[in-house]
Amino acid sequence: MPISAPSPVRPAPLRPEAAPADVPKLLFTRGGHYPRAIAWFGARSFWGHLWHLAASVIATEDIDSRAWMRPSTPDTLTRKAAAVLGGRAGAETLADALDRDVWIDFLADTGDCVSVSQEVARLVFMTYEVQDPQKPGETLVLPRGDVLLFGGDTAYPVATELEIHNRVIVPFSRVLEEVRDGKPRVILGVPGNHDWYAGLDGFGRMFRERRGTVDLVETSTPNEVVRFAQIGHFIQWVEAFRVGRYVSKRSTLPLEGYVPVQDASYFALRIAPGLDLWGADRQLRAVDFEQRAFFSSLRTENRGVLLTLADPAYAFLEPNPAGQHIIDALDLRLEDDSVLVLTGDTHHYCREQIGKTCHVIAGGGGAFLHPARIMRQGLPQPAAEFPGPKASLALALQIPWQIVHGRSGFLVHLAAALLYLPGFTAVRWGGAPPLVMSFATAALAGFVCRLIGGFRNRSLAVYMLATIAGLMIGFMPMLARMTFTAAGGLFDAADLFGTRPWLVLLVSVYVATLVFGTYLTALTVLGIEQHQAFAALAHPGYKHFVRVRVRRDGSGTDAWVLGKVDPLSPSDPVVLVDQFSWTNEGLSAGARSAMPASLLRRMSSDAAQQQRR
Image (cartoon, rainbow, N blue to C red; front, side, top):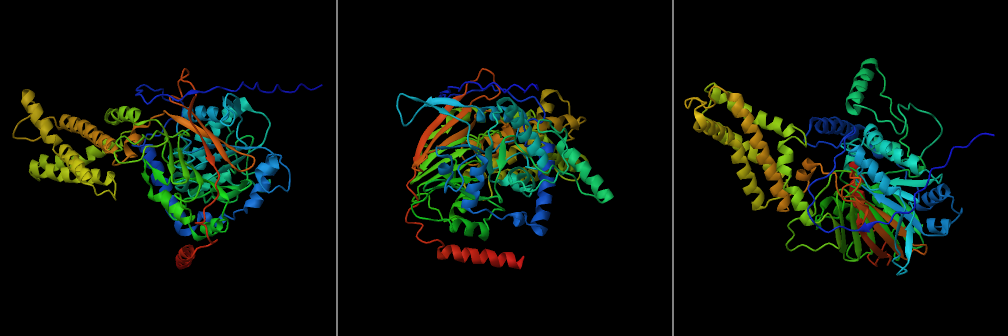
């Protein structure tokens, strides 16, 4: 008699602890396994963006990545999902097919440090025991979701099939081996900007419905990391180009037990009576007329929407243009329509009530941390956030030292050295006066700092901070020479850089990098620019996901946000970051017609532009 393999031991449901107070925490555990967290000011990040941006530009001109998209109707997608989950055939909604509540696990901005990704997967694939919001005094077990919903930016720096494999498939598969239960589940996703860098190639291999049984080239097992992925891919590309072949890629990027069912990068699912799940695609910065027509045809008064976006409509407590464009393209009005929005892109947790809409940012799926808004005078107070402004401020003050010591890579140091090189050369060989070259360097450095402050930001504070930083960077060689001269006459006063120019250059680059880091910190603390500084910090903390219960009758949802402050610390507990409920009031009378005249005009304009191309 054959001996069957023992089934995995299923751990008892975990009871999360209460959400921590907003207090500074300075020491965190960093991942030590390849691939590590992206150094956003490092050569590898720069190479990835350059290579795949070029590929995206070519694809945009010649091959539209949306050409393969033929989105299933909501009824068809619902039947597919119900079949995967073993539900009753012919039911109108997924809840009807299962004859129970539907559970959804939502996470966004995954696939950075492989160690952090594995701990996030461990969070997602656990069951939890919490207080039942509908039955005070009783507890409720939160099972793994029937649907695993990705909210964009699947892997970093760009979501190629190699990066998704290394940073998502491998760490998630390792955890899935431990919690295997034999139950098939559904996986859905919407792409973010990092997915579009790769022309949706990697995204399609992970989320597109499988067709046929043709076996294409598979280069590794699901839990085996491919070393030197980007360099190896480039070598393969060069070799294939030389001999006139194609670079082989994985046909699919599967997660064991999860079945993709969507036919496009956007979708609509009948999740419960009177309630739909929409997944909208940001596309190439402009939602095309086909997607707008798809969602416009679904607009029905008194039918609620659970909306997944890759760009928040509000970020850092202010309107976000990218997300606002998607909301407008879908003809939704957050102030008037009762919508539950689940989004990412901003790598922290923030829940706000915007009119009748519950707007939730949950970008804690594994990527580096973004801060909470630190200075927020005159801005609304969010209902919940993770981390808070005090913890964010403590982390922001570490940024200059992290940058200057190379935690985020050495591109800033290299840029500073190249910035000083013309001045060193010109002054050394008598080509220009030192003061002139210092002013020229200061002007260039100030201009770069001004660009980093934001193209559209015209505030006086940006100009003042950029000018101060530019002057400090530009005059640093003169100050260094004067300091060394005063310290002991190491340099000849008649020669700007004396007999040891390399020493002046070294000190100038170090201090200039510190000034640049301080400038980024000031932008963040003052609420001017929130992304660049914390990208350089590459902080691993405050990871989380959202577990949503869609009620059987479609009356609303209950949600629990579960996470860890320090995900790689063995002693750090799982905490209940937030718990909230949303009532489905359906779409307001703002829907009015299936296709408003304004939407028809935009669709006609888009169609005309595509024909001209």
